[in-house]
Length: 513
Image 1 (cartoon, one colour):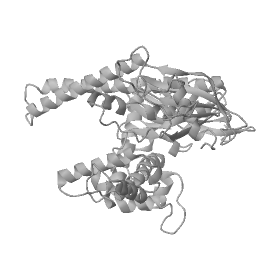
Image 2: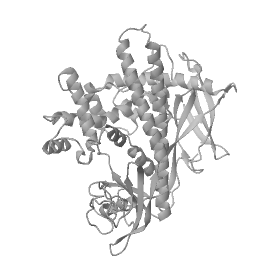
Image 3: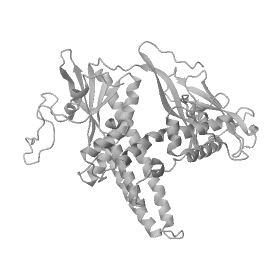
Image 4: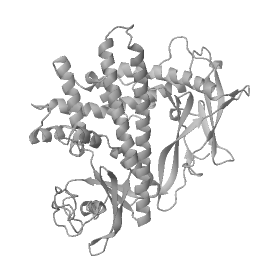
């Protein structure tokens, strides 16, 4: 298979990931068919070897000096470090080895180094943020002054564009450490322990001597070949055998997409596959947009969207009355599961206080049952949020395609903190899935060449998008005794009209790709 993706005029390469599942395998040497359970066991043995070596690497280099050396991008001789994490670690001399007496090939070690290197590279940003917050520690951690906010943003690389919620959460974490130990931490490496090494196989760090993937005659199927151990403690190289695993490709992978070696994870007694692929998509434009879709956030009405057109004379006119994405049923179920989770956590904590350190306490069994139920409720909430985010993103991109828009403008609410609105409303606002929805919108919009731009939310709902008059509190004519709400003016009429106000800030400026 060619490793180059042919691109046409106005196209660009895009790499994405799709989920898959290994349902069976065939041992090539003997022809034995491996069931899903046996395949999961053998993949789990290999993943345990990789995660064990990765954990040792993380524990050995979980310090500021080593992380700075890796993030500097150069080795001791001044040469640039490779982009692949496992190659960078080898250039620095950070090696890993299996436990004594076990025999693995070099590609297994590569996967451990790749996993540890990615985690060590990712902690650099958190270390810089934590260091900046410690250097500019405020007099009152819960109430920073305007001058203290400016100081901490200046100390953080790119801090001007960093959401305030990130700085606030890091401040709370440091304050909790100070309350417990009576002093400030030295850095993020004292504040946080080394991260857990997940049990997975990053086959992207391997070559043909460990794994290969390719399509057959059927464009909807692929064949993954990899070496797996035949026992949990392989003593010889012959304890590793080649296994061929057919994969049914999801329909989201185009027939002409270039497949990459996937990542394997054992979950629920099966082997999950994260299939990476590269395919050609239309290139999103940075400027020259004439039709745009503005998206506004809400609480009961999750999304409101309005399409507008930018004319040659600079006028902006609305296309239609706009539309709304209502998910009242899903949101009601989401809040019900949240309340159920809060109740289970409160009951579990009460049981834990009663049990204390007694292993034979009569409530120990009930405590274990409630802990399992908490995990089930958490999984249901996670699945519900994923489904809601996917549906909302699909609806938004479909609205843009229907209107012929080439750009989507979304309010940037990453810094929004729910305060002074009551316990219930604060929780509802803080647990919205806005970030996940924007992520899915970017993913789907890139498939069709639509640019996605986030704009500051400040003043986007202050003026009427048609007459530009500041919005005022008005009582409804049929409800004169009801207090006025913070709604649109009489000429706006719909929440979709407020969404188009977003374009007053960004429709004429070149959007980021």
